[in-house]
Each structure stands twice: as structure tokens, then as C-alpha cells.
Length: 133
Image (cartoon, one colour):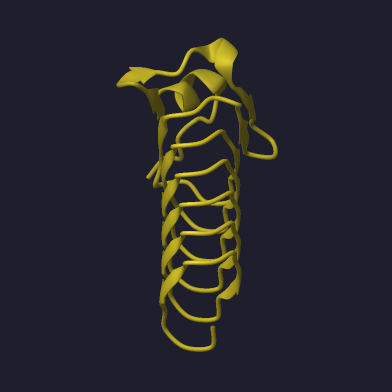
């Protein structure tokens, strides 16, 4: 299988805001470091077939990614990821991840995680995990 080109234009096809592709001038993409950055809110990001990416976004975003990703986001985000991911978020986020993840979040978060995870959270959080967390 051929790897997809990771040009900014191809990345744009993976990011929706209000059902439309996010305008090229509203985000940056560093192909070498695989870093997506924006201050925009209300995004749906489909990077499900990509690993080793970094995301910096606003609030109310939904992520579907591969493994080894790093997230810095605002509040009210939802994550469906692979393993070895790191999250630094604000409050009221939902995480469904595989194993070896690290979370640094605000309050009111819900976690469904695999094994070997580390959590640093605020209050009112719910955890469903495997072992060694």
C-alpha cells in the first residue's frame, strides 16, 4: 500500500469544520514533524491511518488517529486513538485509547483506556482501564 502524501492540501481533506474542509489559511502543517496546528474550534479530524502526529487545536474537536500521537487542545474534545499517545487538554474531554498513554487533563473527563496508562486529572473523572494504570 502506498503511503499518502502529507501535503497541506491533502491534510486539509482530513479536517472538517461545520461539514466543510478547513480553509488552508486557518491551519499550519509541518510535513517533516507531522504537526497540525490551529486555534480553530469545532473540528473533526480523521488521521486514523496516520501515526506519529502532533495536534494543537482549540476546543470542541473530535480526533480519530493512529498511534504515537501528541495532543494539546482546549476543552470538550473527543479522542479515538491507538497506543503511546500523550494528551494535554482542558476539561470535559472523552478518551478512547489503546495502551501506554499519558493524560494531563482538567476536570469532568471520561477515559476508556488500555494498559500502562498514566493519569493526571482534575475532579469528576471516570476511568475504565486495563491493568497497570
